[in-house]
Amino acid sequence: MTPIYLDHNATTPMDPRVLEAMRPHFLAGGNAESRHAFGRSARRAWESAKESVARILGADPSEVIFTSGGTESNNLAVFGLAGAEHSPGHVVSSPIEHPAIVEPIARLEAAGFAVDRVEVDAEGVADAEKMAASFRDETRFAALMLANNETGAIQPVAELARLAADRGIPVHTDAVQAVGRIPVDFHRLGVTTLAASAHKFHGPVGVGVLLVKSGVRLGSRLFGGGQQQGRRPGTIAVALAVGFATALEVWQQEAEARIERWQTLRDRLETGLMTALGPDRVIRNGPADDARRLPQTVNLGFPGLDGDGLLMQLDLSGVAASLGSACASGSTRPSPTLMAMRIPDDRLRSSVRFSLGAPTTAVEIDDAIRRILGVVRGPST
Image 1 (spheres, rainbow, N blue to C red):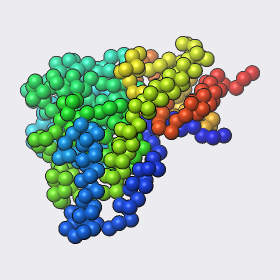
Image 2 (cartoon, rainbow, N blue to C red; image 1 turned 180 degrees about the horizontal axis):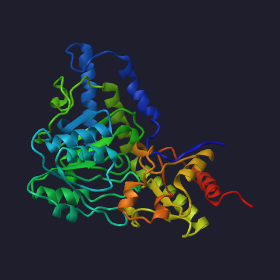
Image 3 (cartoon, one colour; image 1 turned 60 degrees about the horizontal axis):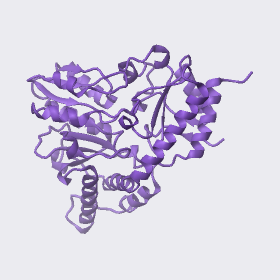
Image 4 (cartoon, helix red, strand yellow; image 1 turned 90 degrees about the horizontal axis):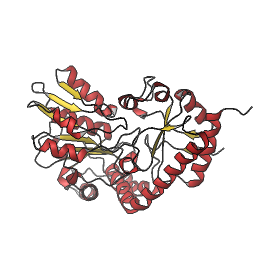
């Protein structure tokens, strides 16, 4: 039985083209801060990667900071914008954020910050005006993800940024699930900071970026060198930066075709299951409007079934899926995102996320439908 990988929102396999672009930099010496020829070569590769990332994501090269991934990027933004070394302030966020945002904000709250987590609607979409209505004079920043990792719901980040700008309030967006799935333009969004991670779009694990708007002072949590404007000191991982940039370049070259194919395969998966099972046995979680969700994310509830048991049986059937965020997969607590959407309990505990990647094929989707139906229906009598 050939395994079918439908958990690309957790992580994606690396594109061989990315590995080939990285290989010379793994094998060569040279610190990008060194002044000899080896160092200059490393520096050129790093600068080129930074310029490529900036061009594709609608930023200036000076606004790009390479990090170890989305978690570090989000932490740098949250604590940097909070100015936590000063007196406590106020933060506005949503209840559907990834743990990489939820937990740093919880740390601020424990340190005396006030936090407003403004409710989302039944489709899991935040209301920018409601979030803006929570702003105070002491609000340090607002945080809203660009696309939800569980339902794929695209959030009104640009609207929130516009409303926040009127009050001079910075906005951070966790775009980890959006970059490499939909077009993302930092300057057009109008946000102050933006986080992304390469392993979500067929790049290497261990590298991300934090985009920081020019002129913004961002406190550092790391000390020990002046690299990357002192915001993220440490020896620059040139090979990983090249890997991030290459994966993003491949995405840009293939974006239109990928999005169209993902939408077709996503709809094929949903329609196949819904037609076979009927509306009482499978329900989609998330926006009804396809334009308001990621093209390759499907979240389905199977009322009456246990999500953990369902996931185990899918795994035994060779289908890799998930119950939600891989960063919280060890928890038995129901999904905070689905809870925030006020999903009924029987659906809440039976919902599974299927997410597609660049290698996903129609043959795999058809086979996955057959296997999922076999698991949901159980043994034939």
